Amino acid sequence: MPSGTGLKFYFWPFADIRKFTIRTQNLEVKLKLPSKEGLNIRAVISILYRVVPDKTPIVLEKVGEEYERDLILPVFRSAAADITAQFNAKDMHTGKRSEIENSIRDRMASILADRGFEVETVLLKSITLPTNLASSIEAKLQAEQDAQLMSFVLQQEKKEAERKLIEARGVSDAQKAISKGLSEKVLRFQAIQAFKELSKSNNSKVIITDGKTPIMMTDGK
Image 1: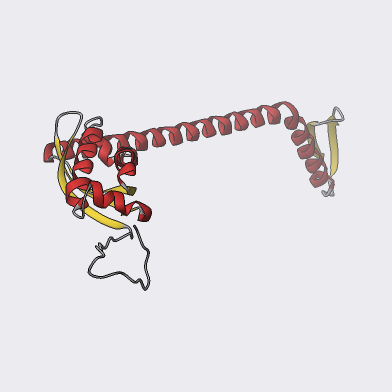
Image 2: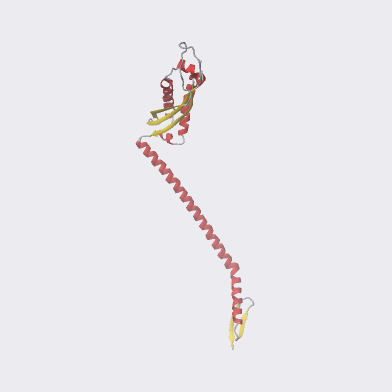
């Protein structure tokens, strides 16, 4: 029967004592994974798992002490190959990476739960794509970034053109308003100024006006 940590008493030599680590274990595996296109992708993957304490008798009876070699690794290799074969190679470098990790973990968990193991997480630590594929993916990503930048520049230029058009319309409207409404006022103001300057002279004046603007002004001596 399973027993936890601490001081224990056993009837030696009749007791058969086996020790199990129930802490989370990190199993790092290097392998080649198949992709949907049929490529082999080199990968380094970590599996974080632990033995469920109250199921250690099941582990000992059905698997044995070499459970990592005899069970965890084979289950992982099978699950990883089945899952990655459903994805394109580039997906392992994109936002689908976490989806692949979770799918592998779930597949392993469904198989290992009844065997006495809990799979906590699966991590794709590194992915090495074939050289030609990596170059084409980088070129595609660069092209997408360039397209996004060009789209941004065009939007800014469009906004600037619209701003200038609005500004030009405002200037035009202002000029029309001046020509219609302000011209008469300006002329009247200038006429008043002219009358003031003329009144300062000591000479006699003859001014012909319609009462709004001067028509003719002459000095008489």
